[in-house]
Length: 215
Image (cartoon, one colour):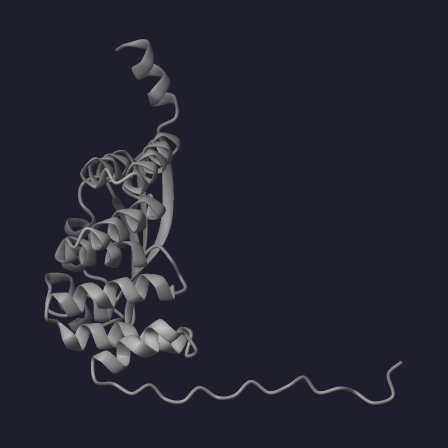
């Protein structure tokens, strides 16, 4: 082992994350079959399916299934600092127009730290901007699992990918979720109209009520 290898191994540590896999993201794929099982029962086949989904670098510790989501606690051993450094370098390459090299570097960042949610999100957004819609949608779905609250920009990107893949119903689902998050977002409302859905009129914001008798 070289000195650099020894130095790198010191920084390889276990990371644990709680991920949320949403039912709507897995309709029609093998993982979606889990939602057909009894939510009170986490069987060995279910854990095996989750293990196959996350891959050999990620260990599934426990899972909880509801009608709409699977909450999974996972852990993986990786080089987080180096992964973040590679992702930051990929960001810089992408801004400079070196998209192919940037995509490769994002993947390298995830190879050494599969639980780097920020790197997964950056990869998905970069793929979407490169019109690699199928790969982008997969990466964005994986990135969405890392974050408890939905982000409108991410949902818009997912909807755009789904629409370009002729998956209109899926695109509408993402846009309607984005509309629930931010009903006043112009981009969301315009995208819904483009797909034949008229968004509900947003409720007006009430002015603050002044209290009498205050100095």
